[in-house]
Amino acid sequence: MQKIAIIGAGACGIMTAINAKWKNPKLDIVIFEANEELAKKLLVSGNGKCNISNAMLCEEDYFGEDTSLVAHLISKFSFKDFEYFCKKLSIYLQIKQNNKVYPSSNEARNVLWLLNKELEKLEIKISFSCKITDIKLEQNQHFALKSFEKDLGSFEKIVICSGLGAKKSLGGNEDALNFAKTFKLKTNPSYPSLVGIKLDTNYHHKLAGLKVYSKLSLYENKNKIASVKGDVLFTKYGLSGFGILDISQSISYTLMLKKKLVLEIDFLAGYLNEDIQEYSQKNLQKNSKQELENIFLNTSKDLETLDILSVLFGIIPKKLAKECLNILHIDKEKKVSELKQNEIKAIITQLSSWKFYPKETAGFEHAEVSGGGIKISEINIKTLEAKGLKNLFFGGECLDIVGKRGGFNLHFAWGCGFLIAKALSKKV
Ligand SMILES: Cc1cc2nc3c(=O)[nH]c(=O)nc-3n(C[C@H](O)[C@H](O)[C@H](O)COP(=O)(O)OP(=O)(O)OC[C@H]3O[C@@H](n4cnc5c(N)ncnc54)[C@H](O)[C@@H]3O)c2cc1C
Image 1 (tube, protein in one colour):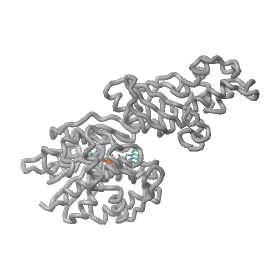
Image 2 (cartoon, rainbow, N blue to C red):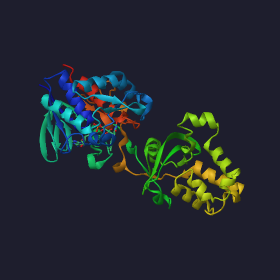
Image 3 (cartoon, rainbow, N blue to C red):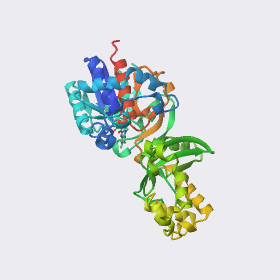
Image 4 (cartoon, rainbow, N blue to C red):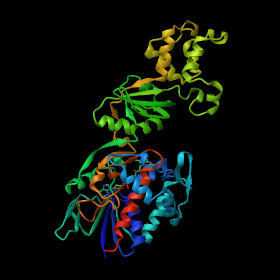
């Protein structure tokens, strides 16, 4: 009977174990997990509702030095294949906005309970609170595992799916990279992704809690390198919210390369809902900047007596309006009709292309995932086995692939488990 060790009981480890056992019940599988329970990250995914996959998977939704593995993975393990896997465990799925997939129960805990039940049914052993600290290749080509000073025995095949550095508090670490390096496999530096950014402005903390639907554009040396639309949330440390998380991959990666960035935020994108409501576009045929300019220039009798701050209050959140005028040194009590042309221009420019200079992200502890990892060129993309070393497999987040927000990262972890299980269960 082949002895197989899986390091890490996250989405990838669980999927590997279940599928390998389904395909070959004779395998003797042990999962070693550093935490005291299964898949802590799965449990908090989608705010506990578990955005478990995405129904429109595409290679373009993933980043990394080489994303060819993603194309292969999706061709072998599509959303339909995942749905089939889930049905076998009585996990039913629902597709929501933007093709995000959630369990019908909307509870990650239920998903985990059903996965655990299957692991028990298949008699897959799990050794909790057991952090693997050492893997050695023995002369007979088996792998000897150690947890600190404790010998855990020797195994014919090893699967390393211990994730990467995001959220240390949930078990995130770089052990997989260290193991890879001991076997002379090349890695790319890791960086936090799907993460907030820190600012060193002297006002962002005053706006903490404010959420504005915006258009975000990222520039490196005046070249636009990314653009998204979504909510921007001011926090005590800087910026977060879905829009920021979505653009954070490009910010974090570019900062890692020590390049300077400018993040331009159009806080007027939500005004008139020009991006989200067809009505506005059809009926007004104007953009929000023109519309705002019209308000200022053709001030009606009704608005003539109003001060500039009051007019802005009707359009954007109060705190943002105040800060805009503070930055531009425009008297808040000035009447709209008294505004000079250059002041009108300055207000509109500030609100529609408010500039921030990201210097660092909020770090791994605030990140949902980590980019970077084991180079894809070091593994066989069909089996996920290390190219230079037989019977050593890597899967999930520890590989140099990171997905967008929306269930892409979990699907990647499930898919890696599926590919590894297929390779493990091949009769030799
Ligand atoms: C807050 C949060 C929300 C998220 N929400 C979503 C979402 O809604 N949708 C989505 O697609 N993705 C989401 N993600 C990302 C997703 O959870 C990960 O991409 C996915 O869990 C990666 O799976 P994995 O199996 O590769 O690694 P992990 O889930 O990180 O599992 C690795 C396991 O290995 C264990 N381990 C580490 N080192 C050792 C060692 N030396 N010995 C033994 N065990 C070890 C860890 O304790 C961990 O349990 C979220 C992540 C976070 C942090």
